[in-house]
Amino acid sequence: MMQDNPIAAPPVDSKQGLHGLPGQTARPASPVTRIVLLSLLVAFGVGMWWLFHARAKAAVVAAAAASSAAANRTIPVLTAEVVQKDVPVVLEGLGSVAAFYTVTVKTQVDGRIDRVQFTEGQAVKKGDVLVQIDPRPFAIQLETAQAKLVQDVANEKNAKLNADRYKTLSQQNLIATQQYTDQQSMVDQLDAQMRGDQAAIDAARLNLDYARITSPIDGVTGVRLVDPGNVVHATDTTGLVVVTELDPIAVFFTLPEDDLTPINEAMAAGELKVEARSRAGDQHLAEGKLTVIDNEINQATATLKLKAVFDNPKHLLWPNQFVKARLRLSTRKNALVVPAAVVQHGPNGTFVYVVGADNTVTNRPVVLTAIQGDSAVIASGLAIGEQVVVDGQAQLRPGAKVLTKPVPAASASSGGAPSPAPSGSASPRHKQ
Image 1 (tube, rainbow, N blue to C red):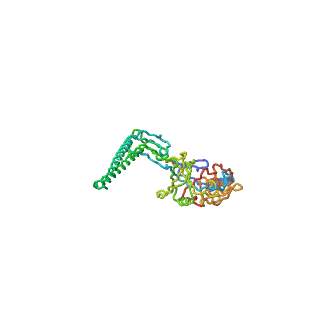
Image 2 (spheres, rainbow, N blue to C red):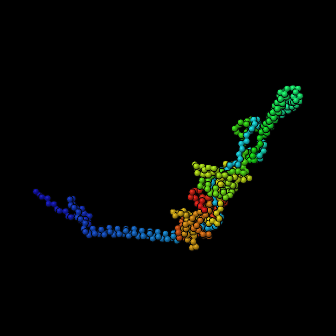
Image 3 (tube, one colour):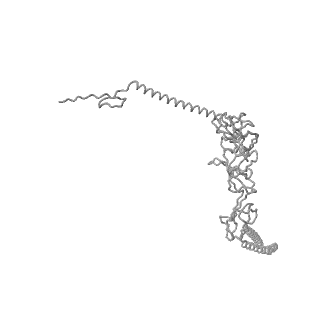
C-alpha cells in the first residue's frame, strides 16, 4: 500500500506577488520600511505648513500694500469757505390759509328769486347787488302803511280841533271837564297810532330793501347755491352764496410749545414778520405780520396756534391752502456760517472736516448755534476763510489727502429765507 508523501510548498514571496497557502500568516514590514513611510509623512506635513505660511504672509503683505495705497490716495471732495454774515432766526410751521371774513349770504324775507346778479367767482364790493327777490309784495305793504298813516293824521287833526273847542268850553264851565279830558285822550291815542303807522312804513321799506340782497363785504363769490325762480324763506338753513374776503387774508399755523417764550419776547420788542411759502417751500407767496397767539396750548400735540395776516392783492393765497409759515424772530449779527451739510455728528459731539494748507483734512470739534435751512451757524471751532468739506466725508479720516473743488454757489448758499431745524427743548436754534 502506497503512502502519500506531501511535498512542502515554498514560502510566499511578497515582492513577486505570490500568495501563501491557506492558514499561513504574512510577514510583518521591516523597520526600514516604517522609517521611510514616517519620513514621507513628516516631509508632506512640513511642505503643507510652509505653503500655508507663505500664502498668509503674502496676504498680509498685500493687505499692507493696499492699506498704504488707500492711505496715500487722494480723495475728491467738495469744499466751502467759512463766511461771516447776518443770519435771521426763523421758526417754521405748517399752516393753512383762512379767509379773513367769510359770510354766508341769506335772505331776511320770504319771496321768489327774480334775478341773480353775480357770476360765480366774481369779485364784488360791499353793497353790490347779488340777488333780487320779487319786491312787489313789500311795495304793496309800504303803500298800505303809508295810506294808514294818512288816515290817522287826518283823524288826529280833527281830534285836536275838537279838543281845543272842548278846552274853551270847559274853561267857560259850559261842559264838564271830563268831556274835555276824554277828547284829549283820543288825541293822544291817534298820535300813538300815527307812530305805529310810521313804524309799519319803516318796516315795509326795510323789507323792500331786504328784497334787494347785497354783498356785506368786499370779497369773491363762491358757487351759487340757489337758482332763480325758487322761493326762499328767512328760516332756510342754506344760504344763497358764500362770499369770502381774500385781501387781506389770514394764515393759521402751529409751532412747538417750547417756542412760546422766545416768541413772546420777540413780540414785546416789536412787530414780527411772517413769510408764507408754498407747501414744498420753494415759492414765496406773501409776507405779513403775526397778529395773534392763541390763548391756550393744545395738550394733545404740545403745539401753539398762531395767526398771521397777509396782504393778498394777487390772490396767491387761497382759503384752505396748505402753506409753510416762517416766523422771523430776530437776526444774528456777524455770525459764522457754513453749509448745513458740513456739520457731522460723532460720539463726542458735532465736528467738521477742515482742509489744511497741505490738502489734508482734520476733524475739528465745533459748537453749533443753529441750523437755519441750508446754513449752519457756528459758535466756535472755526475761523473766517477756512475751507471745510461739504461732500465726501464718508471716505475721510484725519490726515487723508483730498482733491478740493468748490461747491457750486447755488448749493453753498441758503436760497431764499432760511428754514429752521426741527424744534425741541435742546434744539440748537434756541441758543444765543
